[in-house]
Image (cartoon, rainbow, N blue to C red):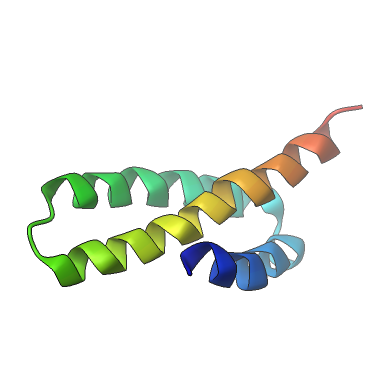
Length: 73
């Protein structure tokens, strides 16, 4: 579900605010969320973190791929 919501929102935000800032936010978000997942003991926190991980994957892969393609000649 996080990837679906991310594809609907983050890709359009990448067009509006720029792909590089969104890509960097996705990298930082991914780092923090993985740490939360490693230390999580509550199921509700794990579910929220997995949803957020889907958002960060969208920012890293889809927005990052488009950013990389645009920067290459």
